[in-house]
Image (cartoon, rainbow over all chains, first blue to last red; front, side, top):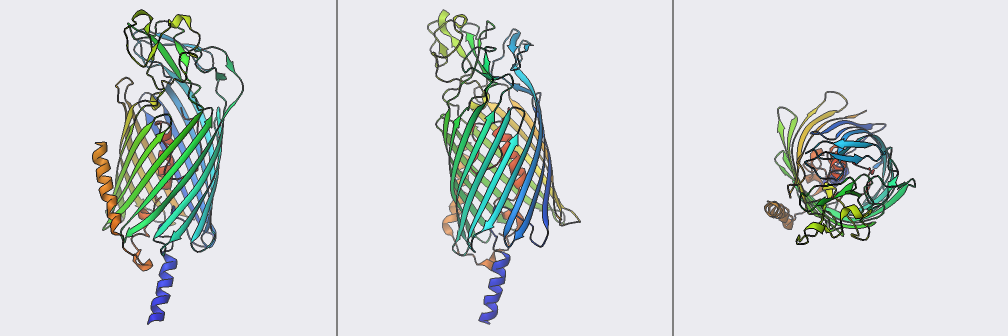
Length: 426
Length: 71
């Protein structure tokens, strides 16, 4: 009896040995786990992104997997350039050197069109029954941006695979080749630019683990320390100096290129909790982010899935993101020369018509709304159903996100995410 | 709102204090695809990309992945 029980235990253990894994894989000789995704991201009156992905994964040895993801994006539309609205038309110089007129009461934007190709490879290999390593390599290329990355994550199972501890390291190396060259930081819009490429590097350390709580729930906890160095400025973003009475840019030379620090150290605390309620599943996560740019952000994500019909699933999604502004973020600077009584962190004590650069007046400055005080709220639905062939499954989802500037200076951003994912084993 | 959600989240995860030993043959629910830590890998990959281009904070779930200029 004891022998049967021990054999049954061993067999069950083998079957369920990947009970808490990072990813699901096809098992079996020559079986390919194939996923294909088509995504459409549409912002109202702004950017549209079409992103297609094909993912292939295969078991090449016992519990050893290789996988590749091939990504193709097309991005187009107007993107805010950092200058504020004005009651008068504004004349802007685009990165390629053309002059355009922004109509009165319109948010200044730059039109862009870019394509991106990216490939990611993963190699997951068990080093022993309890020890596993996953090594990854990625490349991506856009017209003005190339990125190369590699990572290695090591995980070790404890307590009969109830607990897993993880440690990982990732390195990235990016090359930035802006359209029209690299503008001189803090210089006026349209001033001379350099044709030399810029670079940035990133290194992330991750320490974490996961834990089975009971037969129906588990959690994961991660701490990530990230360090980016190099050219972290956005070459296409501007910051304006406005008149202290009208609070609008009054001259054509009132726009300056932004400048960000060349180093960014971030700390991320991430917690995920998954719970089954008799077939209905709650997936929830919380992330706390802070960096030495003084950005602090909280992110909550809840997904609740329940079965419908015979074997379909419906999932509700709610995400809330709240961020405080970077220390060098300003909606604009105010030229205080005509009204010295203005008391604000956003002032420049020099007549804007006399300065060709903000260098010497400020160390860093950005009006990129993504570094401001903002909040994002996402609501979504996903419907999943099995396919009759190749153990296939299809996911259809729609998410709506709304991004709000908590200071009510930037107009609200509304966007839709539409995505279809097909998975099958071939 | 943020504090309320944080309180709910902490209350949920406090259930981890009552850890019980789960034998391998008791992991049928945990072995389901929708109970895996990264069950919707492609959806999450796409979301990471979108929010990376719209927000100042990113990362935390894992390390690695491709970069982008992200206007």
